[in-house]
Structures are given as structure tokens and as C-alpha cells.
Amino acid sequence: MAPLDKGGLALSLLIGVLIFLFSGFPPLLLLISFLFLSVIATDFGKNAKKKMGVYERTRGWKNVLSNGTVPLLTALLPALGISTYLPFIGSVAAITADKFNSEIGVLSKEPPTSLENGKRVKPGTSGAVSLLGFIGGFAGAGTIALLAYMLFKINGISALALSFAGVVGALFDSFLGIGEEKGWGNKEVSNLGGSAVGALIGMLIEGML
Image (cartoon, rainbow, N blue to C red; front, side, top):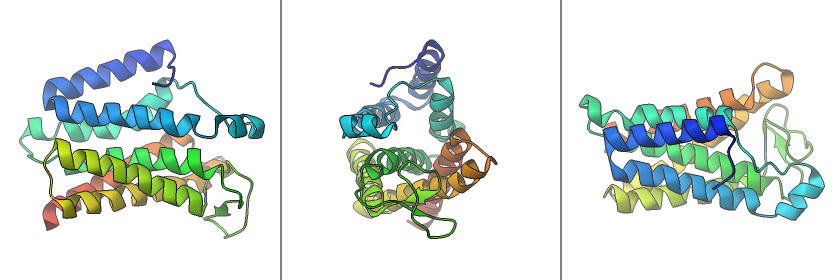
């Protein structure tokens, strides 16, 4: 697990306890899986990232809050009588896809493309995407969907749809990154937006299947 400061550790434990108390072990295990997958993504190509000045291993409470708020809220839905975990899974798929997108995409040999104007920009620029990052994001979301398939006994079509929900959520996160570059927002707001989109698509999937 990536090192957390005291505030980040306390908040992550609180979120984990609440999810376990209100939703049980499967949602908690899926969120823990995200944490371990994020460590793998962060440490992938560590030396190259250090040379580029984009390696960021330590996380604080803001990062925990931005990634954990929507999963926490959606994990509480069954306790409120709304018997679905698909929004929760969609939100976790989105934050995982975003993590893989950024941590793997930054290693692309081809410069990323800005979503604002289609121009090539330097690696690590918010609001930009690369093919390698997109593939990495889909791998991250797909891994979460596969774990959800086993943990929540969802069907294969739902799992595949949730993979795309994660990718779309991560893409929306990147789109919000355009605002980051202009000083209109920050990474925490982008993370919240991306995870919310993943959750909303999860709700749509629940209504369609």
C-alpha cells in the first residue's frame, strides 16, 4: 500500500470501516484491491518516472477523500434499501482506470494529446491522453470488473459494461484536467468527477440489465 500521511491513513481507515459496517466484506475487498493495484501502477516504471520528475508515491488525505467519497456513498446504497452494487463498482473501476491511465500513460514514448486542442503536450500534463494510457486504464477497469464478477456474482455482460464505465469515468477525469491546467480546478475535483461518472454509468447499467 502506498505510504499515507497521518490524515490520509486515518481517513482511509474510516472509509474502510464504514464500508465494511454498512455493506460487508465484498465492497471492502474491492476497494482494498484498488489500493494494491494503485501501488502496482505507481511503482511501474519507477526509475523512469523519477527521471521525469513525475514519480509521486506518498498520498495524503485529499487524495483519499477525492478517490474514496463516491465509492463510500455508493457502497451505502444497499443499506438504504437500494439493492445494487453496480454504481459502487463503476466508481471503483473509474478511479482505478484513472490511476492506470496516468501512471502508465506517462511512460508512453509518444507525447500525450491534449483533449482541448488535439496538440501534443509534455508527459504528465493534465487534460491529455495517450494510447498507452488508454490501454492501461482499460486494463485497470477490467481488473476491477473481473474481481467484481467474482465477488458480487454479477453477470459477464455487466462486468464488461462496468469496464467501459471505468474507462469513460477516467476519460471524464482527464477532460476535467483541462480546467486544472487553466487554474479552474484541481486533481481532487477531477477525481471526484470521474468517479461520479463511473457511478452514474453503473446506475444506468443496473436499469438496463
